Image 1 (tube, one colour):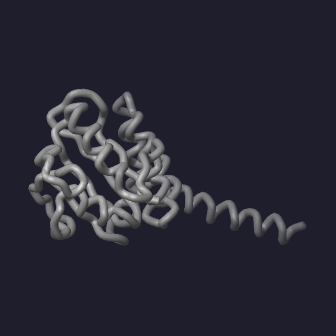
Image 2 (image 1 turned 60 degrees about the vertical axis):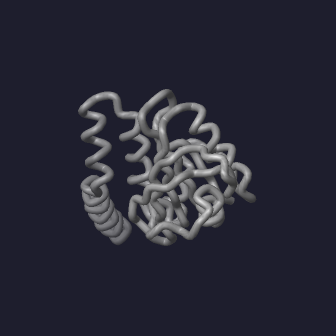
Length: 172
């Protein structure tokens, strides 16, 4: 199943990013831009039309990340459009018309990244912590975990505990 969602905050803004991930991402891209795929990992200015038609939704930037070199490990595209509710709704409606596409659950892109081995559980949890961070201390702690420094410490502790456990078992 291919998923899509608004990745930026809701509400009126100059920019909105709609992310799409899954097997049908190529079909979504082609249905919206009506031409060949853009160059991978290059921001490309395109017109987004309703399902390959002539009715313009918006003009914006698309970035295409083919699998496995994407955040989720699947084909992934980001559509950078103007942040009005009307544009976002039109984009969502156009994407929903592509077969096997559905709106993503909260955190589902990160869940897929974890399931596809792109990130570990600590990093997945730290991404959630960073998104919901309200203080400078929370932000710094989440970044520390994301960088892997905490993983190194935890692995060191695990190694020491296993060593102690083996000594205890040997004594028994």
